[in-house]
Image 1 (cartoon, rainbow, N blue to C red):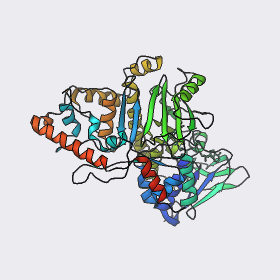
Image 2: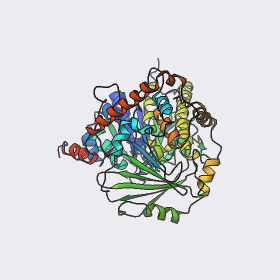
Image 3: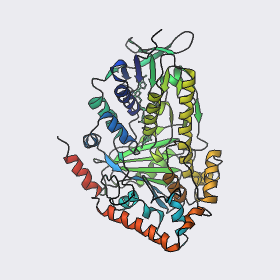
Length: 502
Ligand code: FAD
């Protein structure tokens, strides 16, 4: 029998996606599969991407990364969620906190008990039942597995970091000995006669790089997946109309917040991300509604600290590659698609694409059914993230600018319309299959964007008023106590830095 095993994987691109793919595949596949990565210093990386979601911590475990050491290298801080300002109405502010909300009773999710209580004028808000939110509110942070002496979950966290330093960390500290790095610019992609599989890459100096399987991490252009294989791009700008960003660093702030801030502007929103050595800022906006000059002015007027340079412009088209996997080529990162960083999902989509590839690792023939299954699962994941992001725009009562009026009036995908409608009528929200965002995430954003359910789950009426009050008060007490044990975020970061040998 022919040996059809894949022996040589070639990755094009040395940004976050490329180095994540290289190190994770090398560790998972072992020495039987050679991993080579081609990158070009001439072209450079996109170099933004400072906020993550908690799943990134699985990578550390898998690669044996020491969290303290890695965070020192990438100037990292900890993240408990995203604070969203001025999205529902001007003046609104809510946190999409990671982690649990309260505690379900039996099969009934917690938020139904809260919905029942919340008709009373003095009822505490939903976020009184989130440990992450309570800690964020006082700028506190420390890892905590669970709330002591209780069934409540603990702190769930991610990182803020300098994304180009993260790629550099993987390259310098993890990849040596596992991945062969090739410096060079790919100038031609050679396809095999007959089936059109990629056969080799031609570098500028004439060198040829052959492989059995190719991973396109070349950024927005999609050098292999689009320019060579022409898989096509599905444009989602009619739902997510922002198409430009300006990124600028500023001096560190006097408060190191353990959360990302996303504040709506006249035609988009602005991020603020605390790192150890600086603050990351950026304005994501829709060029049809605001000029570049005006967007720059809005960004600079809303910095908390002195800018450390000029804003750097970026352009993008929101959407996804029609096929993330075509023939013997898989696209990851910006080459696979792009959705704005409002919920910090891009790096995660790279990570889940790699996990999916490993779960479905092919032989050299790349069975078309396997490829279809990968593409089906990828589409499902992207579309659910897309819906979550659209919710932030659609569920607005803002009418103060043409951009927000258009967002409030736009047609949305039926999958999202159904979810909003169900929540409005019943208070119910269900996580579909293994989609990224959980019920507590959806509930916080739905309520944070002012979608009020008409009722709660009938099973939440099983408690008497006294039982309900006691249940809610106990959770608040436990969360309050646990929160008080956490140190200031800044202090925890300093301690973590001190734990690393210089
Ligand atoms: P890139 O960083 O663009 O890397 C492309 C690589 O391909 C480079 O190494 C380049 O040298 C190489 N290359 C290209 N052409 C060739 C060639 N011909 N020959 C050889 N090499 C070549 N994500 C998050 O998770 N959180 C965030 O907060 C976040 N914020 C963002 C904000 C903005 C404004 C933008 C635009 C993106 C943001 N992202 C965020 C997304 C994140 O930046 C990317 O997902 C991530 O950096 C991965 O990029 P990449 O590796 O796919 O591409």
